[in-house]
Length: 411
Image (cartoon, rainbow, N blue to C red; front, side, top):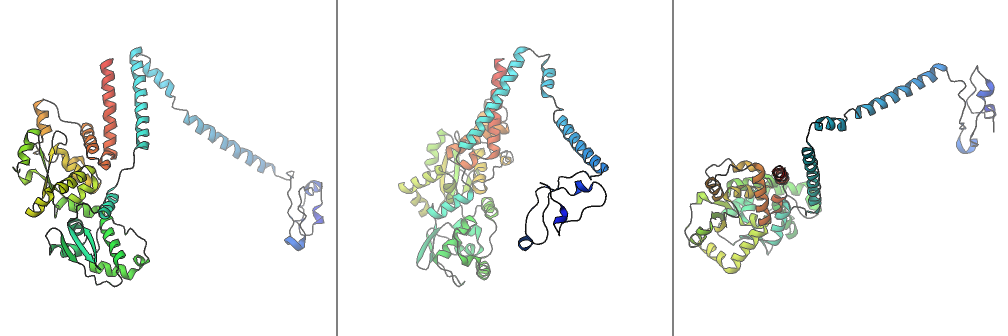
């Protein structure tokens, strides 16, 4: 239905020139009253009769240019004709070679899918921070007790000394095992839950509780002045691994024929053993945790404490080669797999290396070393090492190499 624009006193006036009838034709006019919606009525025009020819030409040319760009992009995407390239590559091949290539692609694809499904089904590996939180909660292998407001807090001397200058000084005055140290904190407002949160922070880097007092800058400044400001957990744990302060366990390696002699009391030189902390290895590996708890139940741990000697754990080198021990310990303290330490100590002389030399086997590749580490990690129940990205990558790469060698042997 037509309507004259002049009927609306606040609408725009018609342009001069052109078809006046066409200019005054509108549909869909809004019948808004001036009182309700202001002065201006909304009109929707379908008239294009007054559009200049050059404007229409510009619009058409712009659309054509855009269309050409899309067509050009589509052609560039189809520029790599993979089917043609494969036909040219395989044109001179024997049928059996082509069949072997197809099976290789199928095997690689199946192995990739298997790796993906295994990653999805695999439980999440526990990080250093989570294991340290459990260590503080369940108190594995504690060696000193802190008394604060008539409450006992069993803790680990090495961890607190590595994380906090205040505790490093305090614990050095009571070096004996199981010492009870009464805490006297000068910072005002520290109660038992807050002291527990401070200890949790030293173990994990997080307070472990929501308390508005930890948002108070004045209290945090007072705590930093009294206890010192610790580094990040990763930095302090790396320092603990490098210097092994307050170590309380050594790892020895021997073959089956040497186990009886080693348990009989013949000790190897300490330079040929690896130092560690019971707290760390028990927190990261259920295998070591069960081993140490069994020693406590049988009374062997009491003997070591009485003599003030570190606990000695004898490992069968045919199961856990000595050359991998430092890589494993490094990962337990830092969550980092560093295979470079395997080749920086040529004088390790592990049993597996001697056996390889006698058998005339060449040096192991990185993929083979990663596979051995993977199986050792499964034995120790140390999932962080077993699920490390580098180890898994080398493991599946070795699997592919084995599949390829089998196919070459068949064909």
